[in-house]
Image (cartoon, rainbow, N blue to C red):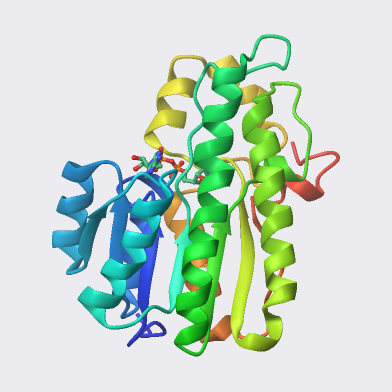
Amino acid sequence: MTGRLEGKVAVITGAASGIGAASAVRFSDEGAKVVVADVDARAGQALADRIGGSYFEVDVTDAAGVEAMYDHALQRWGRLDVSFNNAGISPPEDDSILTTGLDAWRRVQEVNLTSVYLCCQAALPRLLAGGGGSIINTASFVALMGAATSQISYTASKGGVLALSRELGVQFAREGVRVNALCPGPVSTPLLQELFANDPERAARRLVHVPMGRFGQPEEIAAAAAFLASDDASFITASTFVVDGGIHAAYVTPL
Ligand code: NAD
């Protein structure tokens, strides 16, 4: 590894699993000190121990908890350079607009969108005080494209993350804080693997739209996040950073 993140301190939410966990490993391999932030204490603590970072238990929908998370980063590691706001959920009760109840709608908005508002609101003053930094918010390719297999609150929440990130990127561009929205395509996480192993037709319906003909790996999203976190991305802000195997650009895919 190149040590691109040497000397930097990164907070990663949702870091106990999937994309967040792969990113914690990658950031650490590149030299960062990582705060592994998650509700899952067992997996979060184990990962923090493995990479020589620290675990912080947080529910990202809780404003006081989010503030305390960044205070922890500053107290434990002395600075804050990167906030990767990645925690998110996609529960089965969030489905077609015709069947999704208000409780399910609100829960997804809280965890996926309000959390990003809270994390940005708490991280920005601390990043500005430290002279700048990088915020990466996890949106999704579904913020860019429509699906007939709807998860309506999830899609709306990710559209919100995308617009919020763009606005903050523009607002703080001259103050040294870069803000980008990362838009992964479908990524092979345990949840997705289980879902599609039980239902190959469901997998095939999606794979036909992917020019590369496969789902992404968490490590491939982590590599993009590490780039956006690093000074290699010094002229990139307010971007819609798509890492999706070409899905968003495709009309007809290769046979
Ligand atoms: P994952 O389920 O593997 O990991 C999500 C982590 O977030 C878990 O460790 C979970 O404990 C944590 N979390 C959930 N609610 C939380 C809360 N309230 N407070 C703190 N932590 C909480 O998911 P993943 O697939 O790695 O997804 C990570 C992000 O990427 C999400 O925002 C997701 O919407 C987005 N995304 C995923 C895919 C995909 O195909 N997997 C595609 C596009 C975008």
